[in-house]
Length: 455
Image 1 (cartoon, rainbow, N blue to C red):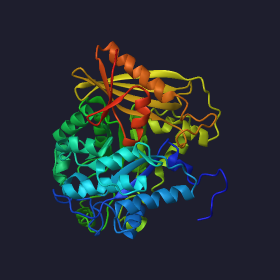
Image 2: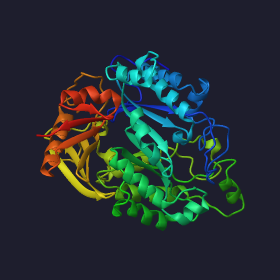
Image 3: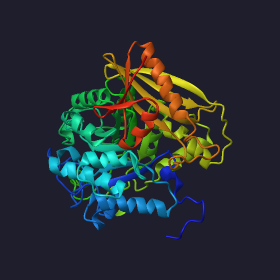
Image 4: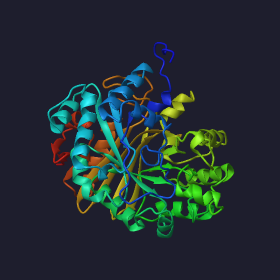
């Protein structure tokens, strides 16, 4: 790689949303429920391929979590990206089904790598990370809806802040057909319990599954946001593709399954983008699968960029979060109005009340957000995020949203709403590396949450 020039950030989109993501891959292990019919069997983590970038990086170090983190941080630094605010993402299978000792050691190794030091215990490693150079500001676990509820306390001890659920579609008949091994009720229950515990919730959605069609996919997608049992905070849209050594490949060659064409995929993705409400973020569109591992289905992994480019040309007013982030407006060299205002969206979800607070300008460009959940006289902030190109701690740049006091503004508004609802205590789910920030705002660590008594 050619060394970047002074001040140049290579691949700026990687940290354009305000944090530096570090994906860590688990070693291969078969899912306990069996294998979904669309999953390949390629002697790598289930649903991935030997040439998936994150798998290739992990295999080079024999899936060692410590070495994976160190390698990614070094790569980011080589591209001039800041690495002080890290989001760790554990990928490659249902982490919660691995042996408990493996889980514990894996998590501890992640913190040790960020700290650049091997600690005696996980607790010591986390305490060090509160003031480390490379702090864990968020930790994500991917899992199944039928597995996660009994591990909520354990996930909080690890410092997990976000949970991604392999939902795929909310239809029991299709679940049976694809051998998914769980029901829609599991999605509903997991969503509710995880939200009550303060986690941010992401769903993986897979249009084009056997038993579905364009009309059904759109109908069920609408249900995600019209039915209060669901309403995820984030989505990853992964259209179904036929991969080698999967049951779906057999069905394809037998003429019993046909994936969406590129035109059909574009149609369903555009419709889903338009239907996504302002409190939800589309994290990713299309999986990063090398073309040689796609038997049938589109091989274009950059469809989102093409689709959004056309939508922006037409001045389409999408509401989903990522489309409106300030970082992308900055990247397009747009003139950005800095007269900011607070917008609050209220909605009911999973037997609770959600308040979605946004700091925006007159053009609906998003500078920061906060998710506040009220349920049974409990109040918890599930996310605070200020957008814009990620900066190191304490760094300030003119016309950049980060470190301008927006987070404090959002939290003060959340405190007001909590008091207006006659709730005297506010909790915040916090990444380990953000605890120090919340302490400066009067919060104290209490049972893995940052908590403040409101007068």
